[in-house]
Length: 211
Image (cartoon, rainbow, N blue to C red; front, side, top):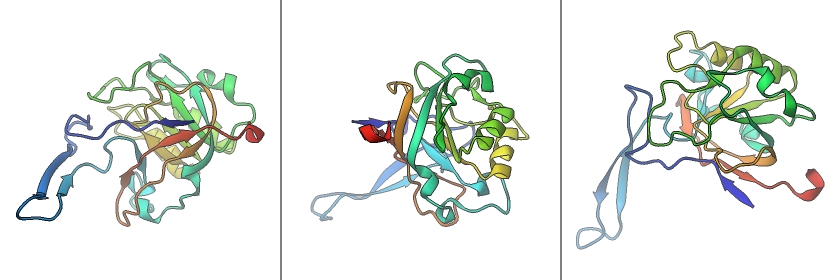
């Protein structure tokens, strides 16, 4: 079984206030003047489900096209912390930390806000990321637009991710995903100089032997 955990990307997609919205136009149209339809798109690197590169929060960090792909592919755990408030604290996850795989995705809302900006998004408490890193987690994901509060100017959780070399997925849609273990597939594009990349994030049921 496959769960698509990526929101649709279109002109209706929410972006951080002031960021570049999705725009599309046709540069060639199938018909008498062209043998094919060809489109051009303009959008933020942080639209839809996306992977932050270290470059996003570290001037000397790697661009997304230069990071190791291994963290974005493999066993992961979906943990529910629905309605937990402004920050995902360790107490919201402690029920599901035994035998933790290297990837953790946290569901914080009943329905992901795929068509509007949520200024009251739920983020990770920095101490939560510290603990997850100590438990061997290499990638964290969340169903909100950022692992830091929307108004943060210091990006404390992003800085923990930088220091611990954690990979980050944001804007996931976990509405239909039961809590448990899966295989994550969420490969970023090879955008060699970019600070982030959209991903088509999916979860796949683990083989019975791996559960």
